[in-house]
Length: 174
Length: 174
DNA sequence: TTGACATGATTAGTCGGCTAACTATAATTT
DNA sequence: AAATTATAGTTAGCCGACTAATCATGTCAA
Image (cartoon, rainbow over all chains, first blue to last red; front, side, top):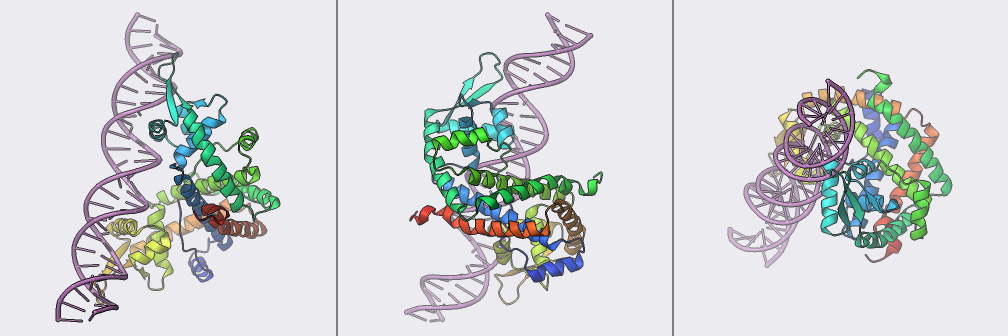
C-alpha cells in the first residue's frame, strides 16, 4: 500500500491548492496521514508475524478457520472472507498444508469441494502467535482511550461510507 | 495490504478473548477497522488513478517532482520520499520516461548522478489527475467535520507513536 | 438422457514490489 | 599516486498478488 514517507508540508499544500482550487487541505492531510499510519501498522504486524514464520495472508486463514466451530471451511469462502482471489487462496492453503498447519479434506458428496481443516499444529501455531499479537496491539493502542476509540470508529465509518463518492464523484455516470 | 472483508463479530471476539486473555477487544476492533478502511481508500485511489493511466507509485513520483521548485530530483531522494527501494524507483522512472512524463538528465559534475525532471507532458498529466483526485477526496471526506479531522489526526499521531511498542513489546530486547 | 450451463478448485502467465549483487564513479587514506 | 572505501544507479532473480483460462464435477432443461 501507500507508504509515502514525505507528507506534504504546509508550504507544499498551499502551492498545490493555489494551482488546484479543488484541493481541501485538511481532507488531504487527514487522508494521507490515515493511509500512512495504516501502512506503518501493517508493516509492524508483518514484522510481528514473521517472527513466527507467518505472513498476513496465511495468518488470516488460520484465524478464519479457528472462528468456525468445526475449524473447517471451503477455499472459496476463505478467499471471500480474506479478501483475496481464489487462486491466491489456493496458494496460501498450499503453503499452510506444506507446514501441516491445515489439511485438505475431500468432500464425499460433492467431489468438486475441498474442505480446509485447521490441524492441531495449526491451532498450536495460533496459540503462539495470538497472545504475542494481542499483547503488542494492546501496548500500541494503550495511549488511545476508550472514548477516542469510539470516536475513531465513528469517523472511520463515515469515511467508509464516503468511499462510494470517491469511486463515482457527484454520482456522475463514469 | 490487509483487505480482510470479514471483521470479527462480537461472538468471535468473545470466543478469542476467552482463549487469549491478552486480547483487548476494543483495540482489536479499532485496529482492524482502521486497516480495512485504509485499504478500501487505497483501492478507491487506485481506481481513480487508473482512469488516468497511472498507478500510485508513478503518481507519487510526479507529485514529488512537482513539489520541487525546479521540478527535479534524484532517484535515490525520490525513493526515500516515496518509501520504495531504489531498484523499484528505477523501474518507476523507466515507465514514466517511456511515456515521456519525466526525463533523465545526466549530471555533468558527478557522473554517477542522474537528475529526474518533470516534463511538460508530466505536468499536463498532473493537471488532469489532481483536480479529479482532489474533487473525489473532498466528496469522500465531506461528512467528516473539521473538528473530527483534527481529532482523527490526533489519534493517528498517538497510534503512530505507539507503533514502536508494536515492534518491541514492553521494550524487550527483541 | 444428454447437451448446455454453473460451480469449485487449480494451473499458467503477468505484474510490481523486494533483496542481493554488479558497474561506474567519486572520495579518502596511506 | 595507488589502493581502499563509499556512493549512485542499475540489473538479476525471487515472491506474492492478480487475471484469464482450464479441468472436473454437478445441475437443469429440452
